[in-house]
Structure formats: structure tokens, C-alpha cells
Length: 440
Image (cartoon, rainbow, N blue to C red; front, side, top):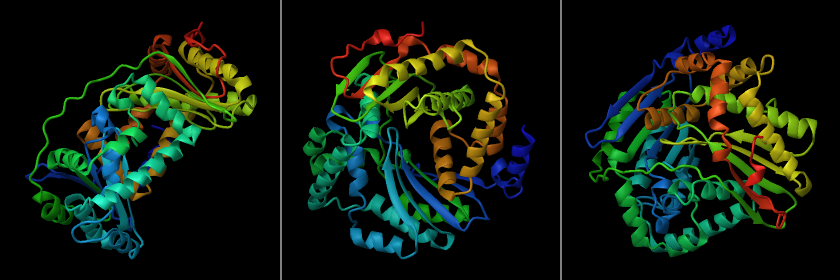
């Protein structure tokens, strides 16, 4: 292991986080999983309620309903109005929020450690006793419709929604998380309540908390609240999709051409995930990456260009995004394809892999300074691995990757048969086709 990072890891409260010494897990009788990590030197606690239900678990006529429920749960309970909820968390300087993903929905709070009981009370109240008042349903419908319009007016966001829809070929994994205007307008209160009851069940609920806390106290309080839920959900069968190789253009009068070029990737818990992280870092994962340096710094063809790795329980992608002008579009695509080819066929540049390793390890260690990041790590470890992954093991996994591992992975992933290109901007009628996406 790199001596610098080895020492940094040991210095984290004498290895507390590196070894997972503060990790505890308890499963309540009704199936709710309670997972904590005690970090005694923090003054805060972050706690999240993770529901294993997201946009990929919706039927086509339900698309957007998970996100709709996320909104509604903050609109009032049997004990509190929406204003009461906001006032109580504000009064202790904390934060309370939520987000919807493709495979889960998370409701979370961050507070000073002494205010953890309040955070648990608020989260359990909105989870267990939401009113879902008909007036609030209509009000949030209007809010979400505006949210959809906001995304559609933000091309560097919207292109990712378009890409996912096309790349996954109609599979629910490609559904837009917010839903569509047509679908959101169609939801009835009964439909929303039914989806909530079918999916917000103990066997699909994980409560994670990290910070200066006591595990037994957290388990006791969660048991008094979430432990009282008795409904259950049927086992879910998810179909694994294959990415579709295609080129699609949405012609729109914009100042830039925005596009995503993607190919198949790895599932979240794949044994080669560390190699994929490093490959991404070298390709477009930072300011020193090949794409950033060549396309932005050397040629000035784009302001924003980067790569990322959407990963799920059973599949994944490698995606490159860039925004450029119409005249430079083809050149930028060709430069990206050139780097794909180089990663497959040529030796890595001097020190490139070691720089990427230091980048990943540094990012990881810096993320451990906040309780909310620690809480999220707990949840994702449980969701995708079913266990806790100590930081020391992750650092070791990164260090063990060799150049030949990256080249073998690049050879497998950067296969033109799986390339998908989605374009948004003023490109109508220029005749772009799948012939552009070759590595010859």
C-alpha cells in the first residue's frame, strides 16, 4: 500500500474507520435492518431510511410514482403539518431531505448527536403516518410537473434522461425518475397509496446511521417505531436488461450540442469494480484525465467533458458526456473513440495508473470526514454486498490493480457492438449514423 495513504488511514481515529470497528447490524423481528457505525470523534449523526424501491420497480403506467411519494411524505402526518416538520428540524440546525433513485428511495436527516432522537421521531413519523391529503396530492403534482419542465430546460441534465431511455431500450431501468408529464398527471391518490403500502414494508427497509451514537439506543428507538410496521412485500423479480446499440438525435435549437456516448459496464459489486474505477479516472474522471486534458485543455472544444459509471445490482454502464458546438461535435466524438482505442491497445502513460490510484484513495478518505457520506456507505454496502466493507479493504483492492487488468477490462467494455450515442441539440439533418461509432 502507498505509505502516505496507509498512514492516513491509520490516523483516522487510530484506524477506527479503516477497520470498521464501530460497525453494528441488527435485524428487527419484522425484518427492518438497523445498521450503525459509531464514529466517536464526530459531533453529528446522519440517519437514513432506505426503501428498496425505485424507478426501475415501476410499471410503465406507474413511472414517476416513487418520486411522487417521496414528495408527499413531507407534506404532513397525523401529528405534524408540513410546516411543523420543517420548523422542528430547523430549530436544531439540522437538515431533513430525500431523494429517489433507480433502485431505492432514501429519506435522511443530519443533526447534532444530541438531537438524534428528534431525527428518528421525524423520519418515523413521515414514514409511518403520512396523510397524503388529496389537496397535497394536487399541489405536489403541480410542483413535480414544474420539476420535469426544469430538467427539460436544462440540456446538460436532460441528455442523461434521454440517454438512459434509449440505452436501456424501454426497460424500467431507463425510466426517467421524475416520470413524464403524461404519467404524473394520471396518478390518483388511491394509486399512490397502494404503491406506498405495497413497497414501503419492513423487508424492504434499511435504517442506517453514522456518527457519535450508541447502537443499542438507535435499535431501541427504531424498534419502538419502525419495528411496529407489520405489512410485508412480495419477493421481487427484476429482469436484467442489455444496453441497446443505437444512435439517436433530438433536434433542438440550443447554443450547444449535448451528448452521451456509452457502452456496457459492470454491476455494482463486480469483482473487477476497482479496475473500472481506475479506468474511469484515467478516461474522464477528473481534471487530469485524458478526455479533460485533450478535449478541453489542449483543444478548447468543450467546457464540460467527463465520464462516469452508473452501476446497479445486476448491470452497469460506462458513459461519457460532453457539450460542444455543432461544428466540433464529430471531432469530439472521434477524440473520445480514440481514447477508447488507446486504452485497449496502448501502454499507459508514465505514472498514470499511480496518479489514478492516489486520486481514488484521496477522494475516499476525504469523504469519510462527513457523517452523511458514512451513512450512505453503510446503506450501499448493505444493498449491494449484504455486508460491511472496511475502508482498509477498499484501499487494498485499489492498490492491487495492475495495468494489464485495466487493458483487459478496456478490451471487454469498449466494444463498438454495445456503443450507444444520444444527442440533444442543433444537429438535424446532418446524417449521423451508427457508422460514426467504430474504433477502426
